[in-house]
Image (cartoon, rainbow over all chains, first blue to last red; front, side):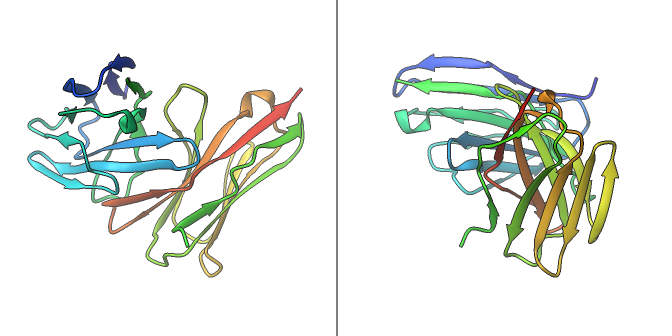
Length: 113
Length: 111
């Protein structure tokens, strides 16, 4: 089954404690991205990657890091989380260069206390 | 002005009604247009995907694009309680490199 898998689905943690949210896709997609979704603000792109070792900032990259060492994985790293990063996060992937729509994971709800 | 405008709702309709959801956009570089459905505690799920101006139909769903007016619509016929969700419009430009999403419209279909 074609899917985008995120882990964990839920996480409560404290300010300053580094965390990583993993994302993996099994569709051999070149393009992967991370979004956060907040009430009234919709989906906002954090980072995206067009291929292995190629990443770029989206609209709200501050406080986040990403890496793309393998085609299937695109982890999101919060080096020093703060309460304003409490949000619902989605990973997505698509076949780049063919204008294909993105496929989304089921989300990770992060609460930073 | 935001790149994509969408009425956030909530929109409540009785079962069986025809629902019309709309987005306007300002960037004429947008090339492809999509509608996603998002249930509570789930990721957005692709419903419709279209490029050209005109209508595209899939079952009870019809997507309409008017590039000259920078306006897209999603029509749901014979709406069902299972259609209750948030509907997001989305647009692609720059040959698939950039995506922009509307804020979403929350729809409730009442039995």
